[in-house]
Image 1: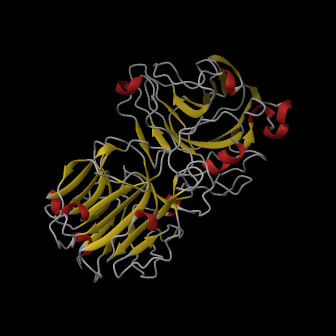
Image 2: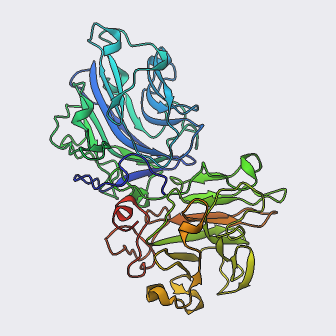
Image 3: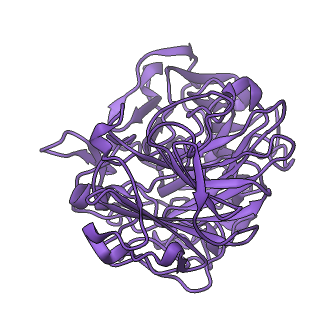
Length: 476
């Protein structure tokens, strides 16, 4: 069992190599000044996005510095998709809500304001299917020149253009295959196709499209210039708040695990209302207090195979990292407490279903803890800064040298294990930064798994793999 979305398991044939991670709590954005559009009344925008949080605005593409006359493509704070022209005078708001934070959505907005029929002037497609049900449905006037196509205006990805406050209505998550076509309202089939076997919407190569004067294609493959336009137009974007570490291999053709903000974080959502997920859901900070302890877990749960994950502790003195096999928002249901739960504590102890015993070295902030989960042999190993604890050898198979023995996933209630962490200090908070192969913290060495996937500080043991959909298709 896994929590996955679009383009999940199947190898699609066309691979997207990179994405760009936007942190909604920061000041991440890309800007360019529009120059000499081909045609101001027609355009198509397409991108793939995996959003990080629900219940907040996510501005994907905006134009104009005037708060009374802006154009926007965004998720609103009710998780509907909105396409807005002229400061809200013309708005399409979907009835459908988009709340899957583990899925990549392909958004295509095709605009042709020359059309005589109002409903033909703006068409919205999600994963290849047109949206036709709207709570707000007001179309632009015929022959309107949209702000995305006006020379001298600012075109922005990742934030609105009228309020630059840090963390205000910013895009959060990762985006890839970002395309703008100037002068043509394209069909979604120019950007993707339905897989003939699975029926899953998947990307196709767009490099052969004609982009028009104002068009661009961002593939995010140059980590030193994430705003680089590869369409041939050189319509590059300047970046703010983004760095090389924000380039990711978490894409719509190889979806990596992140932390799941929909999972109970400990003590119920009310008691952890101040908990935060940042950096595309790879960083979690608890909101401990009143004896409740914040917990985070992976979006992908596994029932077989061998998997490697790293975690860097940013703050907190009583963290634990490990596996759990069930959902619970009980205040005391930290990782390692419940049946089938196992953890490695900062104190150096291990806990197996709440029973504590000696295990390995103590660890603290800035240490990197590795997790090697072997569900073929039902063994679990932990490392501290590259050294396997208890003289463990994750490659020892059924022998399980230095391993913690665990129950088979099939014996658990859900039949799967999640990887996660908890801060069990009720008077202080903890921050955990996870690396499922898509790190948001700096890596000094750089190691991939045996399939060439991921970017880890320490080499994954032979036979262990990053938690992503291509590896799951082969080994999960």
